[in-house]
Image 1 (cartoon, helix red, strand yellow):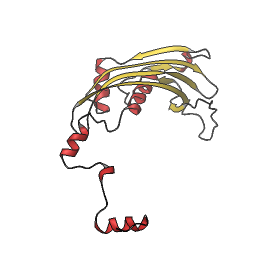
Image 2: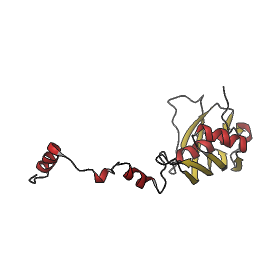
Image 3: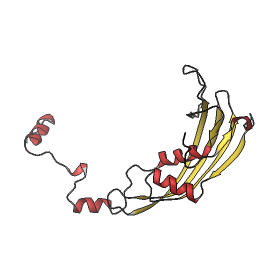
Image 4: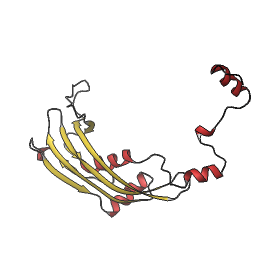
Length: 176
């Protein structure tokens, strides 16, 4: 089994019913490896702070993930500096739990993460939280102008042509 780039295991026997704050920060090597994994130009910072305690359904972690990343605009390739600041609510559930077991969730709905029953990985939880918060198709301020200059129209600028224009007019009850 290959360990994730940002591995911060916390042994289950060290987690009690009283909340304990655990902070994790990725070092330069881990940030470079995560940047490659998530196709980022650079991962400048990745920090997580979690309040962790045993709950009735597993290990519960509430906290915050902060990251500073540099992404590439999908249109221009320009570098975009992005700040990620996400709150997290997680419930780590042991893989050994039966598939049909009922999991109690509070009103602040927790994301469920399976783990091996021995240790939870708060580094990987922080990395995945950051990845989910990234814009999938980041665009710079210049993106729209570049697309327009290349002849690519926005969806709202497209008009039906020919037979489709007549069909649209009929459906709307107008004359073409």
